[in-house]
Length: 174
Image (cartoon, rainbow, N blue to C red; front, side, top):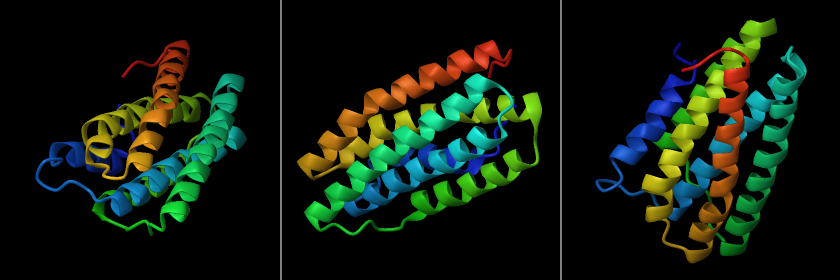
């Protein structure tokens, strides 16, 4: 089953594939980080309110809390560094893919919503981790930005594993 956020995942994949050709600047990385987190916050809020499974609702709440925390750290850092996040094709694609995902999820209910949300979370967190590892960390020029990316990576790994566990418990495997 393809998730509705294929465009955003493709953008993250292309970001990784084009890492050597066009490494993003720190300002672009900042925009990508904030946007990627906001995409998951928006989907998490929907899961909190629309999920039918208590574990899915709790996972959505955790995504809102955790990704809001990462965004708070990122905004504080770019403010300190006087870096203005620079919109770019990857952040734009993430934003539009995230909006499309929420729009598609809003049409679903019950177990279908739960499965679609969790399937998306598995695919999305895997792609974000790939982008962090292959592009964002290697491209970050500022040591503090690179350190932030390295320090939040374990949370993304934990989210991916949690989402995979939920996916398994819901009877869906991608």
